[in-house]
Length: 377
Image 1 (cartoon, one colour):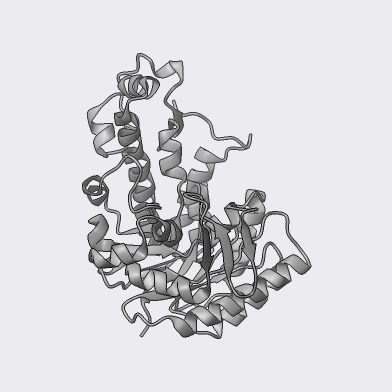
Image 2 (tube, helix red, strand yellow):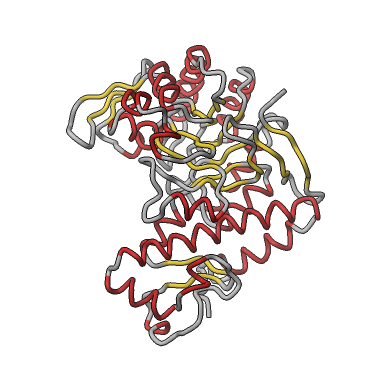
């Protein structure tokens, strides 16, 4: 029996709802995982995230291995105990971070060598050490080591990255030992359908508990990213959870769900909150704008999060312009509430056949005809 079971299906798209079994309880899919790279959500504590209903968070195994170290985390009871989060955790292997650290990274078939951004020490990461690291941390879901490519990439570079990703996945599968941890393979292949198909078929033959689509949102047009995601999702086993890494906007989420994706993560809602950009039921709100200086209304009248229930837009603007830490906390709380509420609405819409209506509404809010989200009234 697999770790994911289907509950409902959309009659108009490839969307499906389901339940994902983890060592820390079942979680409803499709779901959005807030990003806690170093074991914390910036500006927001666990009690607030619990209250918002988050069931899965993403931590980065590479960052945690550099500081405080996987052995220290293991000695202190594992990642859940160390950070005080008693729900499910997914750890990213660090493949994307290694991509972003160029040119300090040397990639070979053996693995990856790079200089730590903390102290400059040389660090080596192989598929085998990547598995040991994530097993020591004790995440519910672990990811294979993979190779991302910058946009644009084609030809020999893509073929080499796919072959390396497949070989690394095979080594990860062979060395992974922890029975209470699900290991996901990651499909790479740039933006070439043939390469994506070859990678997906090779990983499918390895019978992973789940699969991810990686190597997107690296500078390519959003239309290309979504087309590549939809094409790749259709190649993945229908009885396994499918995870789109690093997406994205509310429209990315609903488009991904319509393509058959079950899991998402992205730092966008928390990063945008700290920059004063909020997602609301009426569109985007840029809280620093002068129009909110004397606005006594809530950030989003349709939202029931503590931020929208307790303070005004005028006050939030004041805190943001003053650089108060409370601004980041309140705004982050709202953006994550919006994302988690949107995912709940998507889950409810799937079996009722209402996903196309929700999809149209989100596109109108955040991708109007002019190509730029309109600011909420």
